[in-house]
Image (cartoon, rainbow over all chains, first blue to last red):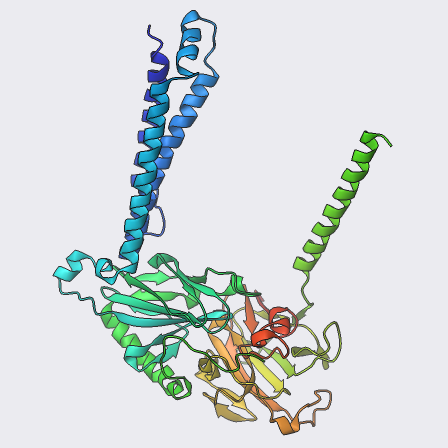
Length: 278
Length: 221
């Protein structure tokens, strides 16, 4: 039998294991962050692609390594195989290098496309929604970080501020993110959104929510003693609701938080509140 | 001296140093002030309630950092320096705060709104308040996890400093109530940048458990 069988056998084993693992990734594993937004869809898809690639490459490397580890050199045939394939084999080396280059370039392309899709409002709104009448006119939600809580302003509804994040589905949402003190990071897991909150800076991100969902907000930047408690989860969690429910909530919020507007500064993209030093 | 002996000495010293550093870090991380337990009482209607009596002072006047601003809690008639408190789950917590510090003002004016209390209201010297001029608070009592926020109006500079050991001295009395849910540990804090002498007023006592922030342990009764 040809010495090539020592390449074919582990290749077949690796291919079978790779297919099994890939099927598990696609049909059984529920990779985060889910499918609540277009960005979450993109992230989940990207995660699947990269998991499939890394699993396939990884299982091939392990299979070949284990196979060769236990391949004895007792027979002349096996000794010949070792001399031919395990030392210097230009064809195998070229194939390995070419595969690596292709995978790295593919990963870079996927990453760039995914990133572009999350920062461009024109790409965030799905084509099917545009066809159904959705527009690129965003709902602006300002996220204000401070030690140690996020608060939210809705400038298109009078500029009231609230500690509750409520967002509508099926509408482009623009987050304007800033901080009143140290650097924070607005990290909304289910939305697949993570935007740094920096004092004096307005960072912008877009999201299009496809279905109602609970939104767990955490700070993603180590920001002081209570960073670990800077979360909106459980009963304080944010929520994405239908447009009619959102309209009802806005009415409620304007009634509750509206009177406090007289004490708030005029809406701006950044704030330099006094006292800045003490 | 032989190489083996040198190696043993160096290795031993390194091991000793590593253990000392590890112990210091563990002790530092594990340190928390004593937990003050507020016991629950069941009223005639069968409702579980408890009472926290707190005070805020511009300088604690004892301990490691006597000049730091701090919250205190009254236990058995004495003011105690601890910001780790325990209350029963599913209870009504009545809070009384004697505020002896001067006005600083809020970084975020939104925090001058009373939120999360029973009725969405607090009582300042007996008068109901829901909103406050954001330049007036000396501190806030806030539990972000509960959505609770109460601004505490400061006394005027002309009456400062006030001495909380003398109950007749100028202070503001704030009362409010809130309800606890199931067992959990949450943090509470002040949102006023009140740490004098620190950049942005956010260092020192704002970043150290035992002064302007702490834990509220909600435990099954």
